[in-house]
Length: 258
Image (cartoon, rainbow, N blue to C red; front, top):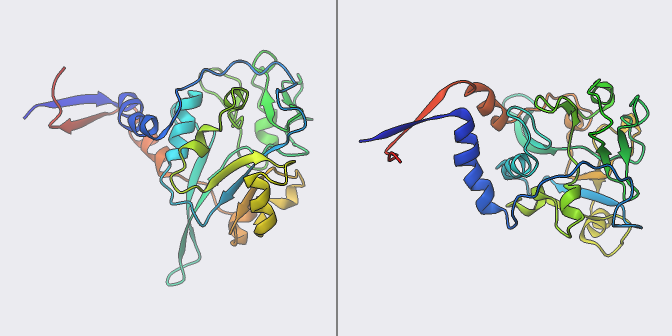
């Protein structure tokens, strides 16, 4: 029986990539440098509700985001932490998606020495790649661990709510691929939008309210203070997979040679 050896990168861009592609309903879009501070959505204020009752930890959102935005190996703009609460026999497993919170009063903006980090008039916080020099001040200032220095571009990187897709009338890739419907994105200024209705009809929470950044990402059923206050280290099996298969070959028996 024939076998093929493939590298870690081929595995992630092939096997996992086919899953994300099958789940996504639109083609991958290239992301331009967000140099304009005005958007096409005047009067809107974008936000997201994450319903933890519906999240199954499948990581489809994580993979879709990675392929949509070409994040480097081992770095993610969004992720789903697999969290274990309490101790046996009172343990409870929970899945908690994380991403940039696109705050009303972002702590990342005032610390940026070049003005590279800015907020559009629709509330989306972005990084101007032409101005960022990768000093990392914003990465340190973010209380949610949502920013990183891209190992390939050497500048600050993070979730953009897929601003390039929004400007084309599309939804963020993570919502389109969420199999449980746990992520709901929309206009917080529109009381009739699905995201506004969820907030009105459910008790919602934000991560690390003590940071006073006023996040625009809200959670339903975020009942564990350890998670809310950021006392539990985020983790994801997808990150472990990328780290543990780095510089190794994976063998799939039964594969045919090209």
